[in-house]
Length: 107
Image (cartoon, rainbow, N blue to C red):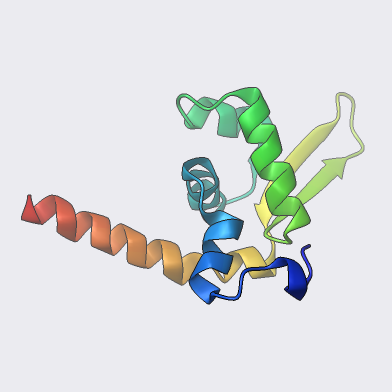
């Protein structure tokens, strides 16, 4: 997780730095429903590369948004879920969904 000194002064810029990419927002959208495995996310997010998905998940894990759970099974099973901090993004994505629906209705 970044220190306060590493974050932008502007709160909006801070939020954008943590969740501001197209793929991170779509990953969070999926994780709001349930925990997902890597390959499930890759299949659901049409067009995302393995590298971008890996980098995005690692970045969000470092920022405390996503948790990664490895199950001691053969073969190993790994699930990604939102942390409590990640769950606090729900109102932001709900507002984005509402705005997107309203925009679609206006055009």
